[in-house]
Image 1 (cartoon, rainbow, N blue to C red):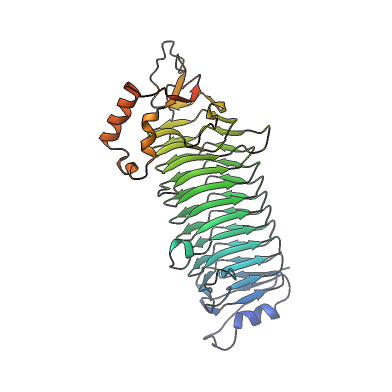
Image 2: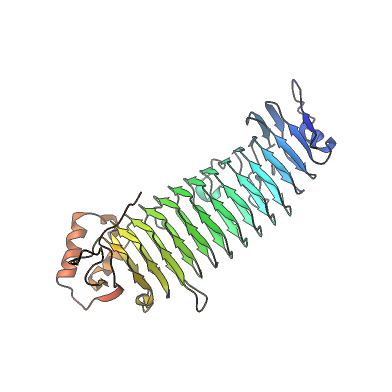
Length: 405
């Protein structure tokens, strides 16, 4: 049976850490219910406990030096707390909450503010981080900390977290995690994966970040049902894959980004493919951008519409024609459907005209979307100065885009 202890007090001494004393005196498996008030932070939890703030009016405040709450035991639950005022040292990874070499812990429905890093999981497995609000310190973007950071942490659930004005949400050397229904805005990397596998990324929404989701040196992952909007700037992209193999990128919506889908040497492992299916790639400056050798991706049933440049290949001899394209909707397809079966009677071929190379000049990109660019694109197709380069062939282009949102 869990024993419940309620802390009652009128004022907290500035010289005595009431909460730490209560933790030290509590028996393993106890539940501490905190009344409204401000509690001194920089606490360490080294036994299984539940700490419940009930309505987030219990505020645990760090002293501005180090991490506010350090968890060193499995089976610890923090919920309904406000946690504020960590240190500001990146070298120490000053955070609201640090979990180190533990398992079966939970951080639920907490409000994290004025903290460098939010929740730092190092070698932490089978834990739950859900329904939290996380924002960093008011620093410039690169100097903020990561809202959630996984390092060698496996089989965790991270869902329904709201992240704003932090730096990144990183998943490094971590496998088998479920990352679901999170919302992130005004950050750098909404999600950044490195050396990971078998993660599931679904139904998240990321807007006004530099990068939506970037997968690097990873494999065996599913990303489905995500919405990524307004990833802008020189590094702006919706979903990126570098050296990634055996991925499923399915039914995502990528809108209003500098580059919608970015593919760099993916798939990487021999005899593997990436299935890119049923996505909506809409109104981006570049719909799909290939960088370096990327073969054997399967683009099936996607809607590619309203992008200024549909597909871009920025590298010589990358053989992008060896990717598989079928049954996609292209808004620039110029064929007919005489038999009414919903599929174009002729293949959709996309060419890259040498005349358009000047569009890669960053200064000229300022005029993207203007009538001048539209006229020049039309003239390049009407009277190209050199033989165009084929980028792709879709043998069965769809005539209708279907329901988008």
